[in-house]
Length: 146
Image 1: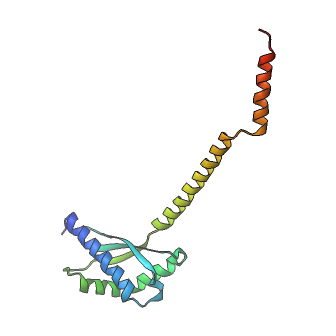
Image 2 (image 1 turned 60 degrees about the vertical axis):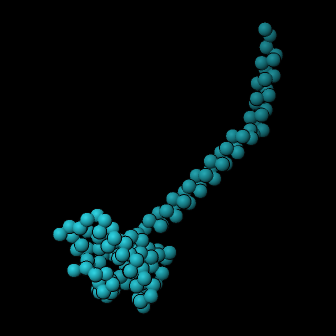
Image 3 (image 1 turned 30 degrees about the vertical axis):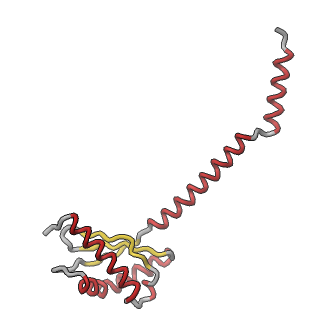
């Protein structure tokens, strides 16, 4: 049975909130420390919940996902106790590299901005060769007879 978009969004948000709290206060696995739940997507039949996670320590990606794979039954049980539903969706964990991509884009924008500012400075202040060329061209045009 498919659920309405509004109900699905409420379920997704509730899973995200509860799982974040569980990770913060109830999970002892050191692999799951410092992990942020960035998004939750539940399918229309409420069979699966795709949970996107991230951490400032992206080099631990594999370790973190292994920790979630190991703890998903425990996490599903805790979530089912907190969120009343006839059947609780199966949890699937995915790494969310959006924060990493955003940081990389931010660095690229900063580089582009610095390059643009440098070009603007170069265009505003002509070099010594350009100044000599301009003055010699002016002298040549003045010496030409009319």
